[in-house]
Length: 250
Image (cartoon, rainbow, N blue to C red):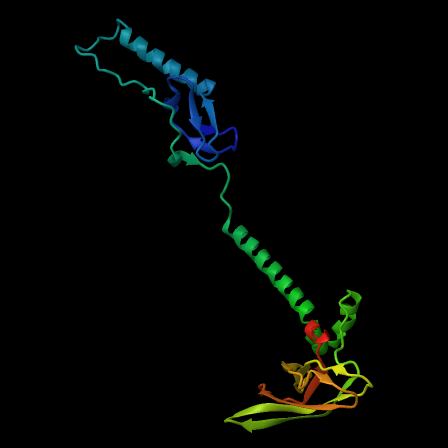
């Protein structure tokens, strides 16, 4: 017979003879719920009828009794204590969670983390992102994350870039000057550099340290850097001032 847990609907395959002596306490192996179980009415009636027919056959005078009557084993032996139904007899009522469902859940988690990482990178690196993709600047401004153009009052002049062979390898050399065109001292931020290919794509980006922390009115600071040459042809190097850090603004 099939026994169903009233709490979680777990199903168990149990021999009907377990309840031949009457109702008994059982415990669900899944949710540990206990309840008093009994045979269904039709099964109990069938067992009672079988027992009655057995008794009538043994006591009937029409049937010759053997010299030694065989001892019939009892239908069941009442247990000494209440025991749970063995887990091995479990028949699950519902299918287990499918493997595809778990894969889909992990895929959704991965996509969420990926999108979150992209958003964080675009927010924290908005200065470089706006330099690489200028069309993003209006969107940053609309979201209240305005792009701060460092180097207000400063200008980059005499920019020159070339391939240079040094130390057994070819590097991309970039040099130029920073001019203070104002009548007051100005903090000098770092410089953001982009190497542009023939198709207009960014082949490499890097940061050039400020040659000096401050420039006085009319003062000029020269900078020069060499970076590893990107594969392919570099047709242009774009330079812009990075956003000043909070430490340099103090």
